[in-house]
Length: 360
View 1 (cartoon, rainbow, N blue to C red):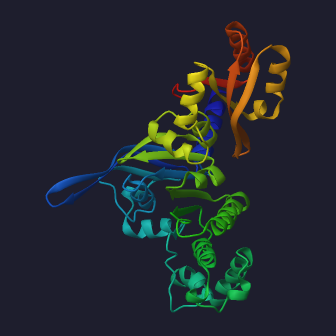
View 2: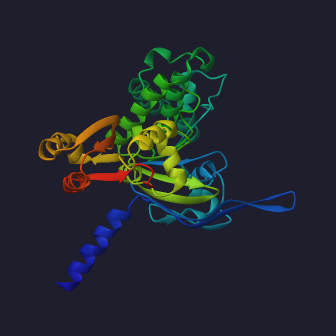
View 3: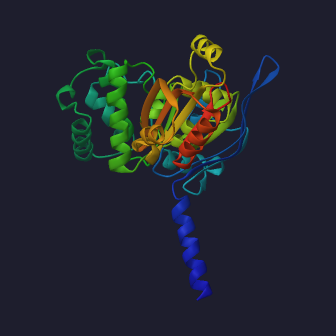
């Protein structure tokens, strides 16, 4: 019986770790003019199978170097890249070529062959892998239908819009039924509306085909729109990582807070805060609603129960990976004891309360 349980546990562990990308003690150093540049330093990171995992950071943070290590376009100076329980850094050239066939990649500037048609660009990986003409044409038509560009089959890249080019790039990356799709700043060259449609397509790919997607970006709204997990990078280090909803609702590192501020305002403007605080000291609060509390009339219940004044200064709401995050900046005026009781009421109902000016 004990042996059966052990076998079952081993089987479950294998399922859990299947297709997970693991960076183990990864460092990448370059030599430049006699100096050692530490592009990545002691990175340990797990990317769950089937996730859309965002890697965000400013220019020079090391995020593009990190994503290029996954398919070993760059080799680490130290450490291991484990994919589907295989150490990619230990594979010989032939085995690495075979494994790379399971990894697709799309780029910021599309990287299409300008002298080839849309059809020829999408078919290219299949041709290189020795697929027959019949197999190539069947897969081509499936992909053109999927990206909604059947009518552009014989067009050349310079006849396409930026969004259409990226769709062709995505189709080419999907041609060989990869298990992993790498996206290196895939929406940076696109306008907001086109970005939205490309992100919707990537989400569809993840949902319908179960492909693990790893996205490098410097735009937090991309992370907000599509990613269920995120890693924040700075100066070659991962400074914060976790489920996107947790990072958005409770960021720890100052850099993470700065990124989140671009899409979810974390602070009132200083001049407004100063003016209000001058009139009534310590009266401004930031309320954060997460999940269930964001959809219940908690504020209305509080006002009914406590004889205090509440002025709403600013409010917004977003949805991340199916969870609603809302926040509100308010001014609470009245008896100090009643205000404290009202705050405790809010906290009991799942609302996070911070006095404005405190670190959140």
